[in-house]
Image 1 (cartoon, one colour):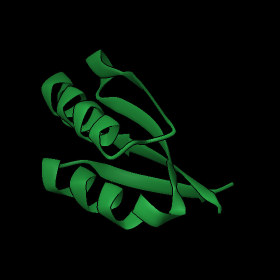
Image 2 (tube, one colour):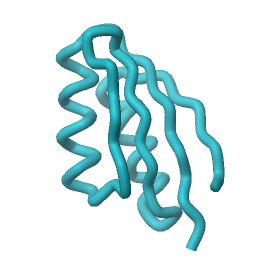
Image 3 (cartoon, rainbow, N blue to C red):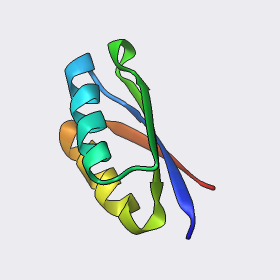
Length: 68
């Protein structure tokens, strides 16, 4: 199964941290971020990619994706 890398930008540190916690609950393969800058990078399995993108957008993030 393919993995999707999602890069997201949030308006603030709190939103980035909220997304980090929720992506971990979705069992993301890897989640990293520079929360003080509102930046987050997550790698998720293709099976949960749509849910992860929706979650990020609900929190107010702007996303870019890459299939690996």
